[in-house]
Every structure is written in structure tokens, then in C-alpha cells.
Image (tube, rainbow, N blue to C red):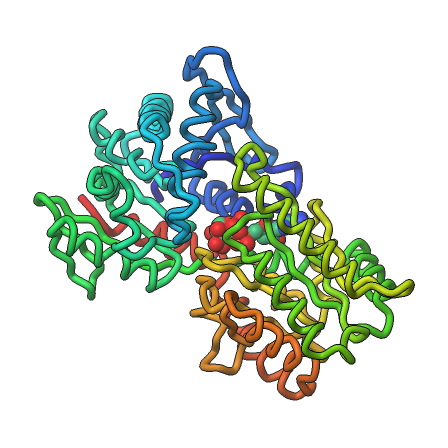
Length: 466
Ligand code: ADQ
């Protein structure tokens, strides 16, 4: 079995047992793949240095996985991380050209950091290693490595959507970015929609030859395979959290504080792609339209802040605080506050308990590569008395959890009326229907898990390319 070199912006150093924090699923799965195949996980340390040296900090974990990190300069962090990655590519790939910043300096910083990553990781790659690069931070990295003589199998997985061609072409130098991307042997997307947008671009804008059956894209005599690999959760690891005292306590805490009312929950990184202001508008519409149901519902929104150095993220936070305040101001009674808005992280055990206590799960992104919260919510339900998942049709997860109309309740997150209507349906849904929908969804969540995702990608990587 080939050794694996995983490259991502940040690495998750495992603790003595399990993996720290919110990233459980993905980090855990990559760690187990690294443990099984042997190898290295390479990324940015998250630290700033005065002058880039490329010197590597190694940490060998209790699980035998080695992580190797480098520090970046202030200008790198501004131009590559806050700049091109999170102010250009992230908004554009989530269809938000209104928020996309097209700064020349950002593009240059992105190229520079990709070059620095390639130079730093190069000595760590042995002849037969397979290299698996993650996400929009590193689209040109494969091409940089090839230019340095790397002949290894190179795979790339995009965790976020791929935008439609007519949006993507608003990016200056879009051809160069995709031509560089096509130096990978295997490119993975979360679902068929993003894959199809990518293939369409390659065909229409680059004149590449595309074979949709095999996913082969041929340009300038070089072949790349592009396929969909829907990511899942670590089902056993996550459901195992439900057997802990911490999970039971969290569930109890939420249930006793909501008493006779139905708890409805949202758990999202505070990001404009997650549709949070639109969600609050939909809830306000529900209260306006069904005033006699205000006492039936408590909405809990857990939203830890992220990317706080970026203006659009400061803006979304302010908008949410204002909207939540307005709704509560208009609807609260001395013994009733309809919206609880919490800006902090919780352990996986606590999240499990909250999901289980909540009889409605709201996952309503405007656009999302996959969305693992939707899958975690389903996994945490009590099979005898499961809650209802309300899911945006624009989340990657919608393709898997629709279950021919018998899974999640699908909504258009832009429509407050649609959300209000489906909240009422969820509140009144009979037990038999809740069970049927849950049973359909849980099969997918359990079977199409993160282990299957890593195994499929890694085994295909072994088979494609030179
Ligand atoms: P993200 O946009 O970060 O990831 P998502 O798939 O929703 O999103 O996963 C978020 C994770 O963070 C979940 O595991 C969740 O439990 C956790 N989390 C959120 N809020 C938390 C809190 N308050 N406390 C603790 N944990 C919290 C990107 C893409 C997604 C894609 C993933 C994986 O944007 O579309 O599903 O990568 O590929």
C-alpha cells in the first residue's frame, strides 16, 4: 500500500485518544487513513513568522501519525488566507460575486504561498507516495509540484461547490487556475452538480475533451479524472458520543429549559453561505403567520464565529445580532424568549445531546459543498421518536437526503414563506411519517460515511494517472 501525504490548509493534531474539537469527522477519517497507510499530514501551523523560512515543525501523535507544519508571514496570511482563499474563491464558489474581491495582490499572494507549500513539502514526498491535496486553498499546488519534477499520483478534493461557468468566468485568470488544477491525476467533488459545472467549464472554456462516463478530462495531451465523492460523517465515532453522560446531560439541559415547547436547532459556522439571516426571516414569518404557535417553539441557533478578520464576516455577525434582537424584542414575554442565539463552540458530545433534544433540525444554507450538520442531526435522532430535518435544496447533502421526497423536508432558503410553511409541517408531522423519513435518511448517513469516502478516493487515486 502506498504511503499517503495529505496536504490541507490546517492540520488537526490528534490528542491521545480521538481527535480534538469540531473537526471530528474529517480530521478523524484522515487520521485513520494516515494511520492505515502510513504517512504525513502537511499544512500551515496557524502561526505567523517575521520571515518565511520553510522550516518544518514536526509532531508525532500518540496514534503514530506525523504532522508537519510551516509558519507563514503576515503578508501571506493577508493575501493568501484572508485574501484570495476566503475573500475571492470562497464567495465566488458559493455564488456570491457581490462579495467577491478581485485584488491582484491576493492572486499573487495565493501563487506565492502555493509555491512555498510546494517547496516545503517536496523533500517529504517519497518516490511511491500518493499525495492528497484538500480544498480551494491549493488548486495550483499540483502543478507547482509537477514543475519541480514530482511524478507521484496527485489527488485533489474540493470541499466546496464548483460554480456555474457564467459565474466562474468573472474570475480574472480563470483559465490559468483550471489549467493548473488539471495537473492533478484525480479531482473529487462533493456531488454531481458541482462535478457537472466543472466539466462544462473545461469543455466550453478550455476546449478540453470530456468523457462523462469515465470522468476523463483531456487537455494538451494530459488526462485527469474528475468524479463525485460525497463526504459523510464518522457515523460510529459520532453515534458513540451519544452514549456518554455529557451527551445525556446536554440533552436533558435543553429539554428541561424548553419544557412543553418544541426545540428547533441550527448549528453552523457563522458564515454568509449558511443562510442565517434568511433563516431568521423565515422564523419571523412563521411567528407572524401563525401567532397562536409562538408558544409552541423555541429556536436555538449555535453559531461560532469564523474568519473574524474579514469584513463580510463582521457584517454577517452584526446583521444576525440585530435580527435576533428584533424578533425577540417583538415576540418575547416574561416567560418566553423565542430565539436563543449562541456564539460558541461545543463538544461533539454536547452537540449530539442538543441535536437529539431538538425535534426540528434547520439546515438552510444558500449554497454548501455538502453540509455535515445535516448528517449529524439525522445520526443523533432517537429511532423511536425522531425529529424532522428541514434542509436547503442548495446544500450538497440535498442530493443524498431527499430520498425521493421521503427524507428531509426540502426548502428554498431564499423564501421566508417556504420555510415558515415547512416549520409548521414539521411541528405537526405525525410520528409514523417522522419515522419513515428518518429510516430512509439514516441508511444513507450510516452507509455513505467518511470512511467510505476516504477509501473510495484513495483507491481511485491508486488506479488513475500514470
Ligand atoms: P464547513 O463549511 O465548515 O465545511 P459543515 O459541513 O457544515 O461545514 O461542517 C461543520 C462542522 O463543524 C460540523 O461537524 C459541525 O458539528 C461542526 N460545528 C459547527 N458548529 C459547531 C459548534 N458550535 N461547536 C462545535 N462544532 C461545531 C466545508 C464545506 C462543507 C462540507 C465540509 C466537509 O463548506 O460543505 O460539508 O467542508 O467537506
